[in-house]
Length: 395
Image (cartoon, rainbow, N blue to C red; front, side, top):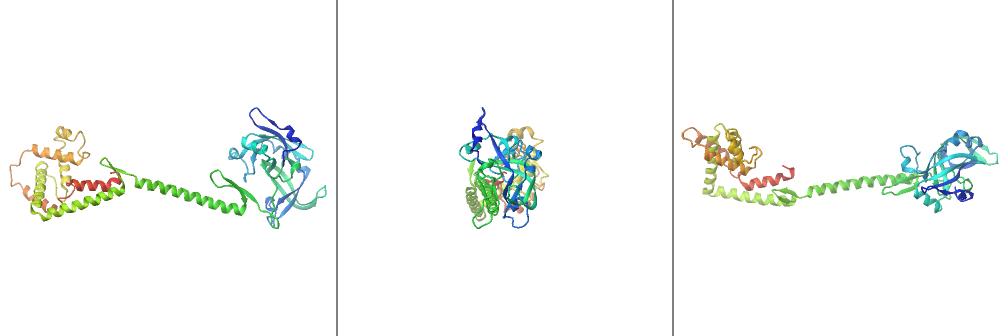
């Protein structure tokens, strides 16, 4: 209902910029409702004439229920309560009272956007409330037929709307149902479709749009997650000080494997290279047996043998090994440092005096089991390829 009229002359602004104006929010007499709005059986969208008797509209409990109610910009579609008051309220009501055939309140509009809309012409109001409806046919004292009687009126909120149910004379009232020519009126509700966009649609349309909006939101979240996963998967990884993408690491691994295969083939085909590799392996195993007689070398890479020897000698050679390993424990030192420490230990240890102590046989057995392992982690290229292969694991 419109806030034009004589009440506009009573409109005032507070020092805080709030708009204060008295307004009519309810009247006695008959008003139109949709059957489903008041819980009547039959066609839910048929128009029903509802009689609001004086005894119910001006019941002290009914009038008191409109004191301190939140004012909303259009009906929110739900009851306003402590959980959502801050979301919907643009002001509040005070001092509800009877004036003639109307219930009047003082409106305090506290939100700037709502004040601007009122000044621009959105000047009808609609009361949101609960009530009991008595399914009873009759004729009101002013001769208007009705289908039901409204009783036990209890206010919940007052909404600023485009069309009030009881028209300009009422100043403030229920929002009027909008009918379509030749078709029954449909209930409407407001929905939020995201990005601050709110739509008022008929119930069946609102349900469809709401479903689409929810699916779009879910799809958007999935796309965001996939983009994040893709960015993580394609991010460069630090490999020995060089930033390499997964594609670059795959290409480098392929190149190193080819070089390793070529080097292994050369060692097998050239007797001199094969013999040199066997001799080097024999020396490592012999030095290991000399330094740690109880060590088992069968089936172990040469790099692992060197590390095991350094770990086994650590307690006896701690000062020297601490200096060689830079203060790190043998398990934590890198392989080149371990290899250097192994060579120093081998050079510092006394040479074997008994050449018939079985070491040669142990070396021979170890070589027999390791003949095809001379290009293992002892080979820097193989070690580098292995580090590339496991770089993405953070190891």
